[in-house]
Length: 90
Image 1 (tube, rainbow, N blue to C red):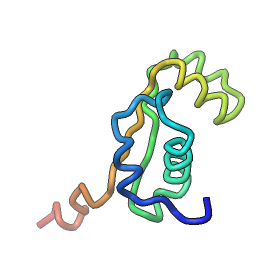
Image 2 (cartoon, one colour; image 1 turned 90 degrees about the vertical axis):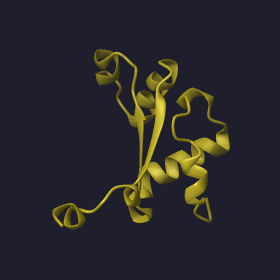
Image 3 (cartoon, rainbow, N blue to C red; image 1 turned 180 degrees about the vertical axis):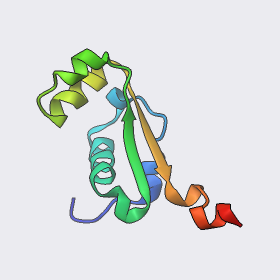
């Protein structure tokens, strides 16, 4: 991806079933899963797979495939959605 996808495009994936993402949505999800911290975005896959099966995965691609089959969901959180520690102390 030559240009970073918009934060709005990854936020739109929140709550979606991982297996239903289009190829372009998978690229957006992967970009922010790897580099999201630079953009104050955390992307994870909420796994519904059996932990024992997931533990056998030999790579992230294998784990992703297991999570796709289990209808796991995408979770996207922006750090700006949460107060900072210093704000909480006030």
